[in-house]
Image (cartoon, rainbow, N blue to C red):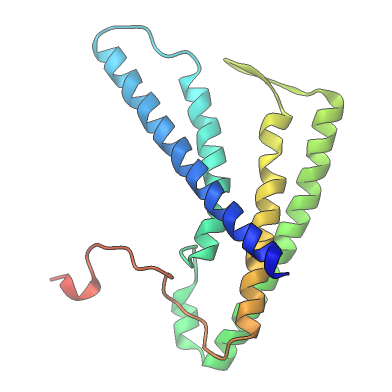
Length: 180
């Protein structure tokens, strides 16, 4: 199981790097588009479509990293006001829910992926691409996200510490004590 979690950790990091690369490519493309328009050159064909795909890809690829670093959306107000025992039980429930949602999403999206490959479904916009070229992202990220939640569930079960409400690594910036 440790090997699977170790491999999943590397996959989380690789997906994170690919998400950042997609965001950087979108930023460069949009910047180039603005510069071209300033000088009355024609627009980059398909840029809006590629940006849509980039947003889709970066959102799904970044999700496992956000869960891993505890920077995902949390209801910290509720967690900080309940007892440590209840917070621990609630954390188990949340992680188990994530695993179930990932399992259902993975099964359904894999079924849709198989159907789109079998049927040869195409997406017709500025570019014509096979639908499966976007469909594979959801089963992969469902697997990675589910394994990440499972790893966190095991770690949580083997730890006596109460659930943390803080991100695993603090991001430099304005701290609450620095505000007026």
